[in-house]
Amino acid sequence: MSARFMEQVQNLFINLPRQEKKVARVTLQKPELVRRMNITELANQAGVGVATVSRFTKRVGCKNFADFKLALVTPDTMQRESEQNVSTPNDIHNYYQKILAETMAMVSTKQLRQAANLIHGAKRVYVFGIGSSGYNAQEFAQRLMRMGKPAFAMTESNMMTIASATMQDNDIVIALSVSGSTPEVCSAVRDSRKNGATIIAVTAFKNSLLGKMSDLLFQIKSTELVGDYDFINSQFAVTYVIDMLTQMLLQFTDFRATMNKTVEAILVTKEQTTGHSNRRQNHDE
View (cartoon, rainbow, N blue to C red):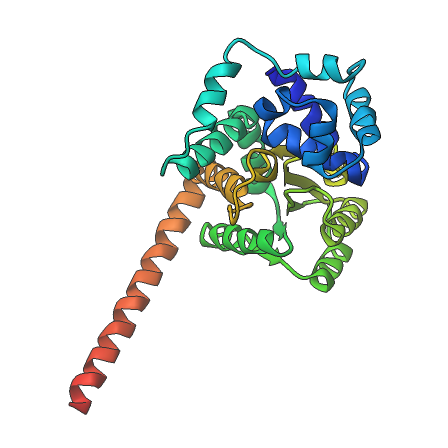
């Protein structure tokens, strides 16, 4: 398939009408299967009408359905079809490899360095995330605190509202939203921008509301648009970006030194707690 065409479909996805999103989702998840379908079969697979498929194909720049199918064809299509039809224990591994590879292709060292410089020079860092993204927000804020940077995970709408109202022009907001359209996050980011904060976004859709409001964007691959596996971690690519950014931040001497100091302090506390528990157990015995 044409990589450029598939990228175009993914970039349009977030702003498509609800019914056309169903067609786009099937196309992005199973392009080789779609290539072998007629328009009625694709409509049935997506759970929409034929007219919806027709509107979708024109929206992505194709003259008709036949033109749309041609956009999905490349010489290695048959090989991928054969690979997809064989189910192996490595399916999930291969799936994650694809997510990593496609995310890595969209994230540059220059971007990571730029974000690291912004964070290093910021007075305060706020990490916004709701639901599953909230767990990553808490993890990243904790890492920044261990480096000595004042950081706060905002994972609840009221707290985001309060934080956004007190932003200053030397603050950084790191907004995590795979869809780029999480209402609470987008609202808080909009208010934070008004108050002068710099916005770093991590999202799968650069044309989303969050993507358009960001000063620096890390685009990731959405797990939703790669395969139809159940119970796949939607945050996998977000975590990957956070890990890469953490490594970049630890290249700053002061961050590295403070991280080592805080890790050592935690280890000492754990040893003291364990020793106290052991002495108490021996005394009880």
